[in-house]
Amino acid sequence: MLFDFFKDAILAAIAAIGFGAISRIPRRAYLWCGLIAAIGHSIRFLLMNPDVGGLHILLATAMASIIIGTLAVFASPLAKTPAEAYLFPSLLPMIPGIYAYKSFGGMVMCILGETQEQFNYYFYQFAENGLVCIAIIMAMVIGATIPIFTFKGTAFTATR
Image 1 (spheres, rainbow, N blue to C red):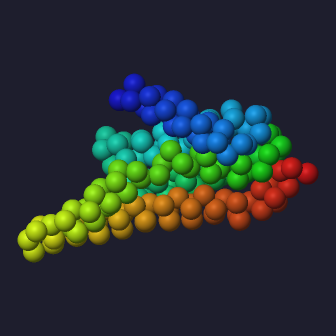
Image 2 (cartoon, one colour):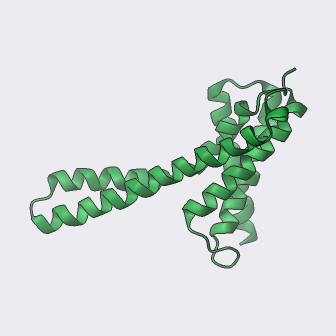
């Protein structure tokens, strides 16, 4: 489990730095972006692990997003960069791609299904995975913005 924990952290950091590079964040924010993503994604990994937390992906993502947002707000004065510059790239590795993929696949198979049973099965797959995907993304957005509005003094004065 320890190997998986560190692998998860490193891959999340690499992904966040890559998304940060695409977003053209300042170079001084790359380290913070990777560090925050590694911490947040690892916390979600631990919370979802049945031996540690055993939480559903939705709840684990919401908690990890709040932690990512808090870390971004308090790291922003240190890097003299707005928190959003590395908040959003740090959240991107937590986007539920497998749920979006299964939802889209279910929709396509729903359309191509030849019988009522196939249609019902694939529509259920489409609806279930689509709802979970949307709920996770909403939890990420809400969880990440809570610290920004809670710690306004720190969040909005980082570049002054």
